[in-house]
Every structure is written in C-alpha cells, then in structure tokens.
Picture 1 (cartoon, rainbow, N blue to C red):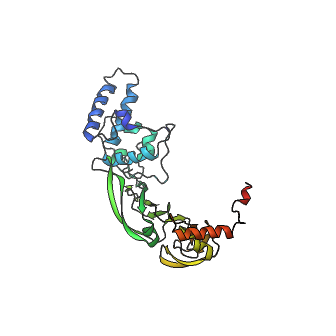
Picture 2: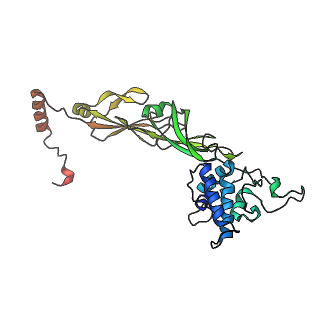
Length: 325
C-alpha cells in the first residue's frame, strides 16, 4: 500500500508542536470542508486532513507513526510495517475531527486497527474503543563506538559510554536523548568487535521491548605494538654485533618483559614467534617479534677500523649478487 505522509498533508514539519498541528488542521479543514469548499476533490482532501490530524494530535499515535515513518516507508512511496509491528494505541474513536473515521485509508487501518467493523460480540462500534488492539513495536537498536588504548583492550576495563537514543516526549514528538552507561569491557577485545547490551537501545513503542545497544571497539594506535587478528606485532632493533654473533635480549610484551634469543647471523626482517603472548581469548594469539638491524649514527675511530678489517676479511661476500649488477 502507499505510505501516507501526515506531516506533508497538514503542511507542518515533523518537529511541529501540538499547537501548530492543531492550527494547520483547522485551517485546512475549513478550506476543504465539503459544505463550503469549491476546491477540486475537496471531500477526499478533507478526509486526508482529518486522518492526518487524528494521528498527529495524539501523542501515542504520533510516536508510533514517527517510528513507522522512519522504518516502514519505502523509497518508491510504498509502505510495509516493520516485522513484529503492533500498535499500542489502537483507535478509540476520539471524536476530535469532523472527518468520517470509517472512511480513513487502508494505511491508517494497517497501523491502528479496525475503524470500520462493529464488534458482534459486544455490540460496540469503533467509537466505543473495543477494538483497541494490544499492539507494540520494538525500539530501534543503537550503535556506538568506543575508543580504547591497546592496554585497556588487552587487559579489560570499565568504561563509560555515551550515546543518543530517540524517544517520544509528552507531546509525542520524537526527540534525541543522551544516555550514559558504565560498561565492562572483557579482556581481549579487538578492533571492530562489538559488545551487545540487550535492552539498552531506544525505548519501544507501547508495550514493545527496547532495542539493544551495540558498541563497536576502536583501538587507538600504539607507539610500539600493532595487532593482526589475535597476534601482536613488535619491531625490535638489534645491534649489528648482536645480529652477527647472536645474543639474549629483553623485550616488552603486552603482559610484561621477557627475554628472547637472537639467533646468530640474524638479518633484518627475521621473525620470532612468542607463543601465547598475543591477545587473550579461547585461542590466544602470539606475539610476533620482527628483528631489525640498527646501525649506530656515529662510530668510534676504533670501531671504524674494525669495520675496515671486517670488510677486508669478508671481501668475497656480495649482498647484492642476486640483483645481477
């Protein structure tokens, strides 16, 4: 079915206060009243204006309609209620407009229930309110992002998360509301992972349950460590003599300092794997140590002489022989 934009029908914005909605309705109702109007299709327009006001004058109906307007309207102008939609407000007759409620649109019927059928069991018509249906709609899920230092994600921590939910005020207008929660971050959270907090999203409509809050973790860059999956990567500089002769050196890990052995004859880019030193979890990651040969910026005269001796002793070694130059 086609979607009905009640705000456009009355010529008001979606944030219009009740007094503006009432004023717009009265103006248009006079304009299109079948007894006095000479406008083309005045009778149909009068019904449309009455239907729009019937919804927007009522805070509960308006709140439900705003939710449907956001989630049920399609780009092609059609309408499909979201899965699980049920109206909490129903239609109780009201009597606030001069429009014939029995001639309201199929769109209205789909949202708020029957306005056209009498209740054979009770003998009541729509105006008696016996057709108010126990309908409801679940609140929207809310997504938030939380930046963590690598140490916080590795060890776990407690953080405060602030986010915005949309709720109906006393006039039925959908307004943003700031919400802050204290959240326990489990150890081992990685970049892009989500934490789901059930029922902490936007409030439901009517008796509908609230939506959920989904927190996406973002890891702040670390000056030394980086993360790939469950593994932690660390580039470690080693001196030329440590690389040539081999050495035992102390390096940092996310859990503290450890000693590792640099193999004799190490070249830049060689990797050492420290099992289980990566991010914690059911299957803990490893720490990958990438060795990088670092040269002193300046050499003592004696050291320069030793390099000259080394160059003479290793003159048959050509590190660029594979380049064929």
